[in-house]
Image 1 (cartoon, rainbow over the protein chains, first blue to last red):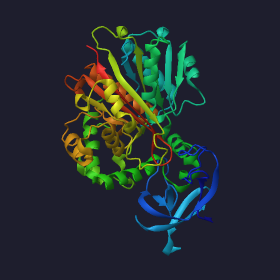
Image 2: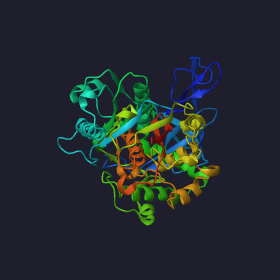
Image 3: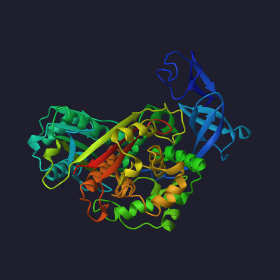
Image 4: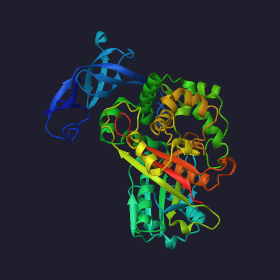
Length: 104
Length: 384
């Protein structure tokens, strides 16, 4: 697990992207700098309770998160906090996760 | 407007929840092709072009399918745009016939992934999904569109039962469609009591994966069988990656061209008798209808309760994919086009909308990351 989520920020116009892009959609340059977003606010949450073809599935909480100074991303949630909660972001592999600041 | 190209015949295979031994994507497509050729009264040897879409044709491609079907062609296309593939192929085929590149052209879509196969497709839909969504356990498109649906409910003040009106109305249409996989009536009590899949989506909000195929035939209107009206496409428009996934997903790419579409068609939303709206999820049906300008004052809740709940608007009259079933994804869009053709040719049997002359059909799909990236719409008209 690593702190924050890696994003790609356009060196020309500072727009942040996740997932990675080939060209900036604003200025169409291809010079990106790696950056990290460490916090975000939960906007919507779902609990995935059933998955096609899976018989032994543990429900997963997934959220749409507005990152601070970055893009909106989809994260896995590690706790029960709801919409409006400020969460800390972290990565497991290439996947973004989040947990409430108070809880960690 | 296309003056020298029209849809003259349609056909489909059986739709089944689980493909049986001996059934495959190829055999379903074959059955649909045979039915469409028979319907159009065209011999297979006359076919000069073919367009195909499928999530489960690989490792075969379009030319393999042509070979297996014994079709020697001079025009061939394989489309990969998911829920808007059928609309995309329709546009290309119309232009192919209109410009003399080939005629007749078969447009074909089919899938028989099975549940396990579909789950693999859903987890590996694109690189973004494979690397950033599947590891979360997002559950494929259900997880993605549950978030979009919540967003739509919050923005427009929709309740769960508003979506229920759509599921119930489409099930009532499906009862009149012998090809639909779910035909028994659905009540609001049953809808609201259904098991949760991905909050707030319950079982009846999630399109059921089936195996099956569709085919339509495009040719000069003169080739239409005697006594049957050809169906002309007055206008068709497409959109791909309309907002770089930087919006909220509550508008689709249709919003980028709707005004131009109506203008090119010389029609208004009020002129439409039948609508085939790509229905992978109820929220996206409302989004597309709103983008088309068919929802007064963007009041989605009132539209759901009155126009759909009280059956004032014939929408997805074959039952939609939510009741008839969705073969893989791409083939579902062709079902909506086929139904519009049957309605405009006054061949829809028990579900015929009296005097139908104009229809709108749409496609929507290819979830890039947070919502779909492709969309298309067309205005179809009965030629007298």
